[in-house]
Image (cartoon, rainbow, N blue to C red):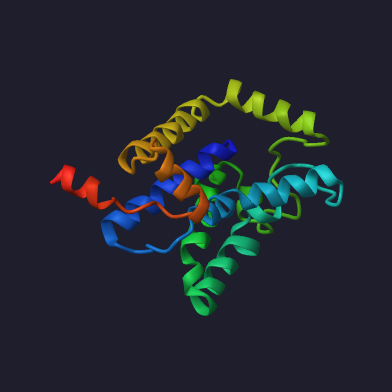
Length: 187
């Protein structure tokens, strides 16, 4: 999944939880976006920098047992306030459909190597890998369009098309509550 899709689905999930269960009202959408992209930011940076001998863009930060479950358990035990960010971080595995790469997801239970996603030896190689995914994986484009639909839903339902509301959202990381004038016009 492309970065926009990771952010869109994390934001959409957070908004549904905020509306439906009245949880995570103070969550910062900017940090949710960062958490949703964190596995790619980490693993792709390792691949491009040459620090890792694994040149794929899905290694340690895409593993269930070395990364995602320890972060989730640590959050539940020590920092419950971080839960919306940890959930966005963990949802990354779903949006990347990591079950297709069991060598990475369940590392090291299938051996020491990671799954063969793509060889990312340069920024150009990373761009080529994403182009290849868009061409070959039939589910990618519909999933990305679903992410665009989620962003449009947030834009319309929370009136982020209004400049003041959008600026407030960008400045605070929180969706602005309806103003008094907007509440009167709705009711």
